[in-house]
Structure formats: C-alpha cells, structure tokens
Image (tube, rainbow, N blue to C red; front, side):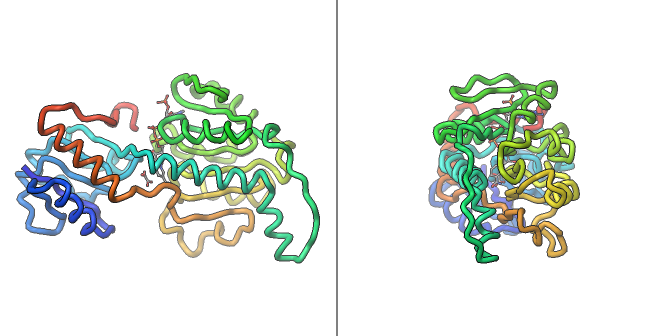
Length: 313
Ligand code: NDP
Ligand code: OXD
C-alpha cells in the first residue's frame, strides 16, 4: 500500500513532504523516485503524463489536485477506478473573490477610468445601479452557486445556467441547451464556471457574445472566463473585443497556457488577463482533504466528490 504524487511540471516536494507528515507512516512516493508501482493504491495527480498510470495494478482511486478533471478524463490510458476531485471552501471563496473583483470592476467602469487616467482625462461617468445589471453565471456547481449567491448579496440581478434545473434563492435559473439563448439575452456580464466537456468546449464564441443583452452596461456586455481556456474560441474573443460586440473581458484561462507572447489578447486594452490564478489549490487544505479521504477509505468508508465519467465532470 502506498500513495504516489504525480504532478509533472509542478514542484512536487512540498506536497510529498506534507503528505508524509499527514499520513504518518503510510508510504508516500514522488513520481521520479524509485516507485514500487504495483504497491500504489492512490495516485494524487494533475495533468498526468502519458505513462502516469503504467504498472499501477493495485490502484484504488485517483485524487485530482484540481477541481477541474478534464486533463484526467482525456488521458488515453485512464484506469477504471474512481476519481475524486478537490472540493474546498477556501478554493470556493477564492473563486468568488475573483469573480466579484472582475464583475464590480466592470460594473463600476474602472476599466474606462484606467483609459482616462492614461490620457489624463477627468470625466465623471455614472454606472447604472447594480440592480440594473444582470450577471449570468454559467455552471451552478460548487463554484458557480457560491459566486451567484454572493453576487446577489451585492445587489446584482443574477441569472444562472446549468444542465439540470436548480433552485437558488435570489437567482433566476435556466437549464439546458434550449434555455441558453434566453439566459444570454437576459445577461450583461457573463461569468463562465463550467467544467470543460465535449458539450461545453468552445461555448464562448461569437454567437454567444452576440446573444448577450446590449444597452444596459455602458461600453457593452462583458465576459469573465475563470473555468478553462478551451471554453473560449480565442479568435472570436479577439474579434468581439475589437469590434465592440464585447465591451471588455476578464480572462484567467487560455487555449494554450502560458498564454503565448504572440497572442493578440495581450495588447487589447479591454482584455484583463490573469495567469490561471482565480482559485489555486491550497497545499495545506489539499493534503488534509485527501489524507483524511485516504485514511477513511482504507477503513472502508466510501469516497466522496466523485467524478461522473458519463457526464464528463
Ligand atoms: P461542478 O462540477 O461542481 O459544477 C459544474 C456545473 O456546470 C454544474 O452546475 C453543471 O450542471 C454545469 N454544467 C456542466 N455541463 C453543462 C452543460 N453542458 N450545460 C449547462 N451546464 C453544465 O464544478 P465546479 O463548480 O467545482 O468547477 C467548475 C470549473 O471551474 C472546473 O471544472 C474547472 O474547470 C474550473 N476551475 C478553474 C479554476 C481557476 O483557477 N481558473 C479553479 C478551480 C476550478 P448540473 O448542476 O446540472 O450538473
Ligand atoms: C482547478 C484549477 O481546476 O486550478 O482546480 O484550474
């Protein structure tokens, strides 16, 4: 019995050291060590390498460092064992902080004032009241529901869209592909918190941008993408930001990360770029969560926060 930490491209050592302390005697290996692969029962992974699961014949579960599991589910040799994703109150809070920061920045026209500051222009612009601005949250799961509730508390009109119908106090909910156009038509600031699946890939495209409500938010509708880069068609995003279909965008995730130097998004004044930091997995919380899960599972308890492979999230 053993746990394998497999985080290619990341510094594995702080995670390994914390897991060793937390699991106190339970063997923990880092990918790259001399790993007794047939003894591995659990693998803690992020963006697994093609040979990540080779020889793991005793594997009981995969623990995902991230909330999003798209990189795991598209792995060509994914073993048929349960996948547990990371669900954490700090991560949820962090995502809601990011969403609120972007939404309030766009609502209060801070982006416009930045341009004015650069040009040394003193012009008072009057934002509409928050109640007059509708924020539409795509994805009403762990992260989307929290963001939607908190945006409502700030006074925004909040719409939410998910696959199955949800009931959330203060949020007008829309469900399924058939309700998508109505959801967009009632939305000024579109926030993406969907998982990346075959159905959601490329959903932030020109048709979606054109479907947003116009005339309420000075400067035009806004998109905030904090989920996955492949949700957006980047060429469409660039065009929409240039031709006025969108007033602005806040983008945390990109088709290719790090965002290549030659991307036109870097140079667009109305594009607010962050380097995939909206909600970073916290080491202390992650190790506590998965160590507790591993211990409980070894005692016979069921795993929780499992990925549904059929749905793709
Ligand atoms: P959840 O699985 O809890 O929620 C997913 C939501 O999306 C659900 O409401 C689900 O609907 C909805 N959904 C899925 N497919 C569709 C569809 N085809 N049409 C409409 N709605 C759909 O995910 P989380 O909230 O935990 O995380 C969301 C994503 O955020 C992650 O997958 C990840 O990609 C991203 N993320 C980004 C981070 C960053 O730092 N940028 C950090 C953490 C996560 P239903 O409720 O009906 O199932
Ligand atoms: C995640 C992420 O999915 O950080 O957790 O993107």
